[in-house]
Length: 525
Image 1 (cartoon, rainbow, N blue to C red):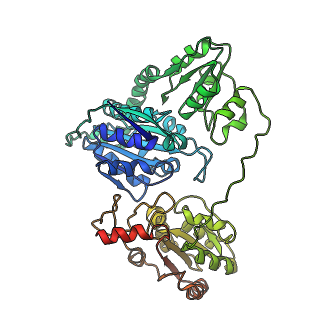
Image 2: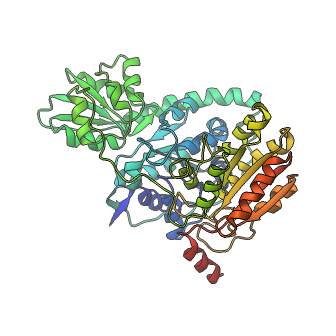
Image 3: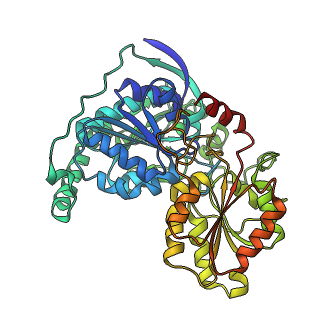
């Protein structure tokens, strides 16, 4: 046995390798990004996909060939991967397929606060939730075992605090070998035409009944001498509850779907009062109340943001007075020397209506730029702007501009260009791709346009944005450095906005923080 001091993300990577990982694949997104970096660092095969849907489908292919795949993403990434996710629940999967959903309560770096426990119930896929780095390790190994035993995907749901907090991890000495790869034809259970899918849906529901027994068996109770009340909790909330309430017994739902209803009922029946402590939606609370398990209802104010020990104490005391405002911090801003700065200054000064996207350039919404007017999700900068172009009177439509980054362009922006060319607005459109040669906000990861793989070694091919958009039928494709050629950029932008053409302007200059690293990668090549 070996001891390590690991973050949750590091523990997941180590566990995946120890479980006999064939391939790790995902799309970078805080708080999940470091998992695949660590898989690669410790000798495993890992790759960044263009987006989460692609990643999950690649992972499914690995599992169809009897391999073990781990697919990583942040919570909003599971929205992108939902299309294959729901059907994969029906399919008999020969290998191991573990999907990591890293949720972000409190929205430290996200555009919404969704609770992906809802996905497990909606799709009918088992979900495990670790509370510590040790459990992150143990439950990753368990997830591969369950996936291979029941021939279905497993979601490992972690949250920001589990991903980034560090703790002692005890790791067995032995590492499993990668499973032997082969393909066995099984059309009725792997090709989801309606006739086969109807049977598969019934098969899935039957499996979930069996998994309920495992869920009950996996549940853990932290007993206390003379406990006066009970707490049912999940994930990191377990750790907060243990510290906040030394006179309570704490029940952990290790498998949050299907939930351990029988064990929760037994546990709650021991106490006059039983509370549910959970971040986000009242998922466990709803399971309890729907199954006649008496628990105290949580005040609505504790649905929002991350929990901590102090908030749990307030919650248990029934304190619903306004919570103290957090201490003011330094507002986020674009880095000094960021190549996006001059682009946003020009957009602001020209009075453009800017449809923005997800990435560090989203900070262009803040002063002194105040140059972004909408931001929905990855890729939406182009398509939302096209809706505006089709709707606004001509004088306003001509002001509409899309701003998107290079990694985000490859993620879902390509489809927006297809829409732009296919359903061309009468006033044309202008898309500005801020190409800083990296996936900056999530930690300087590579993408299909950098020419480098996840481990920063040369990729077999490099996709070139201007070649792709020209081939798709865009009228004007301009490449410019808006920092060195700012006046030229302003004149070019005014000219393109005045025309009825379809234009893509690629504002290309490396991220100021990534420049040295990029240079070292190029020198190594």
